[in-house]
Length: 182
Image (cartoon, rainbow, N blue to C red; front, side, top):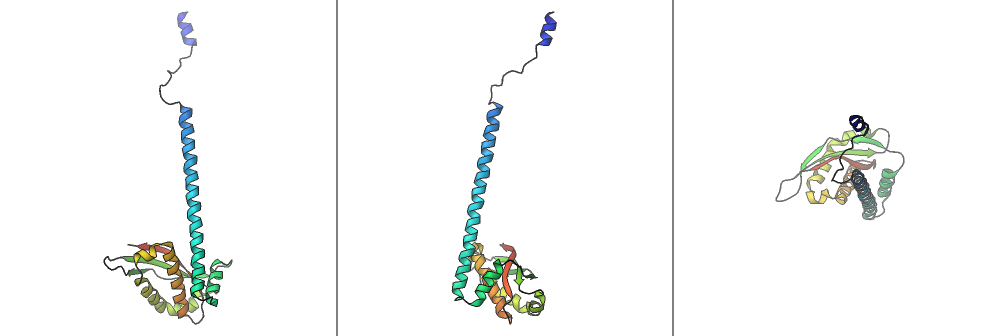
């Protein structure tokens, strides 16, 4: 009979001397929520600064242009609802103007152009466009183009140089799809 009584009583696991499982789960959930909250705050702050930098760059470029018609067309075209056609340029690899060190820039540029056929105006001018951009890029130093403001300024300068080569300003903006400084 003693054996039957022992079989009916379920064996219980010994009480662990460590941290309770509920406490571990609560700490993990709190850490996850705080991590996600921090990541959200960083993204919001970084995103807000990017938008402010772009707005400042647009207003500075308009002031430098003296309120020319081209600057307002470029700004409204870049943020307008109807995107323009994209014209691809081959990647650029240039030596930067850093004096003691030798630094390189690899840059791939795509131009947003007004009109349905961007190749009609730009294709015959590709050698001049590439030359103008190469001269511009090789005059820059690594410190100046690594910052967001430097990239926005470089984008505006490329757009202006390409438009200066065309009979009618057709390039809305330049997009960097690859940007490597080494």
